Amino acid sequence: MPVSFSLRNGTDRAAEFSLTVDPSEAFMLSGNKQLQTRVPPGGEKRLRYVLYPLVAGEAVELPRLKLAPARCVCVCV
Image (tube, rainbow, N blue to C red; front, side):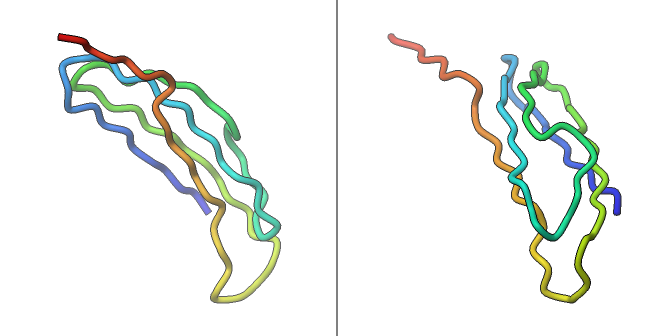
């Protein structure tokens, strides 16, 4: 089952993110489990994964994707 995520940066500064995909007992995952990526100003980054189901059913929880700023940039005035 192909899955893709798009990260868009609508600011005038580059954005750096840390991405983690939690393991799941219901799916095998093809793609980066941990990644630090940069999205240029006004740009977009597409992340693609392939999920392989290991169990059947309607209420199977997908792996969780966690996205956080890679570093905090503070502007002091």
